[in-house]
Amino acid sequence: MTIRYGLIGSGMMGQEHIRNLALLDGCQVTAVADPNEVMRNQAAQLASAGRAGAEVAAFTDYRDLLAADVCDVLVVASPNDAHHDTMMHLLDTPLPILCEKPLCTTAQDCRAVIAKAAGRRAPVWVAMEYRYMAPIQRMLEELATDRAGAPRMISIREHRFPFLHKVDAWNRFNARTGGTLVEKCCHFWDLMRLVLNSDPIRVYASAGLDINYSDEDYAGARPDILDNAYVIVDFANGTRGMLDLCMFAEGSRWQEVVSAVGPKARIDAKVPGPARFTSDGKERPAELEISDRASKVVTRETVTVDESILAAGDHFGSTFFQHQRFLELVRSGQGAPEVSLQDGLWSVLVGEAAERSARCGQAIDLRDMS
Image (cartoon, rainbow, N blue to C red; front, side):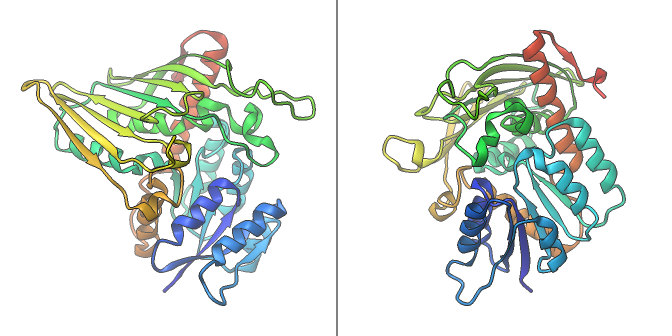
């Protein structure tokens, strides 16, 4: 049986979802909803490409998509500030939902979604695709074998290009994104919590808007999102994490370097940026590096992903692998989402605390946030 997907939000990330779903057998996008006519039409054409006679229903309002009853699964890829209201409606349906990160722009709204979802049978999966990057998956596999011992520290460096231009410049303003440390970095708080197997308790951030967007003006409004930060996160089990974020470092060999360190070894997952941001326009493989503490031996492994999967998006194939796992869950009708609503809440809570810390210059105790 073909699983029919309905896409709510059809901009850059929505179209990445369409391209990746097209690579999976037994599913197809049958409907898209977006108030922006250009994005809506682009997405509908993309979803029907290569499928002779295929009809993709296009709606201005996602509520009309729901009423049409043409989907088995819903994917939310609208701007961040639309997630809360949209999810509160979608949770009344019996359909599985994959909601793009961040779950909402505030922890308060995340909690409202979680309360609404209580007792719901159909799964809700928060799209933390960085978990599914091939080198990160290899890191998680090695950690599961106790290769490093129980990790005590994790550091994440992301040196990359600035935020891309999106419809109505929604990603230029804290009020619509939740702030860079929510919008962009929720992935990283999620990874820290996953690797360290503990909940965060304290956050300290130093951050600024120093280089990007200085020449941009939107009807008198100037962008206020951060473009660089250092953030330290303490966890309940005594472990700690650190983020080094720079969004004016295009051309870096590794866009992300994730390092988990335990008593036995350090494991580094190194991820290249998208090919369209490299000097030669070519995809590069990722790398896993393990530095053994006892033997002092360093081993390196090249991590590759099929070129057709890499070409489907900007996240080193992770959107495809995430959809693959989500589709397995939908088909089986059993089990729980690998990324839960609670995971979505924690990632927003840490980002919200980091934004607050960057503004006030003080560490934020998450136990004081309600």
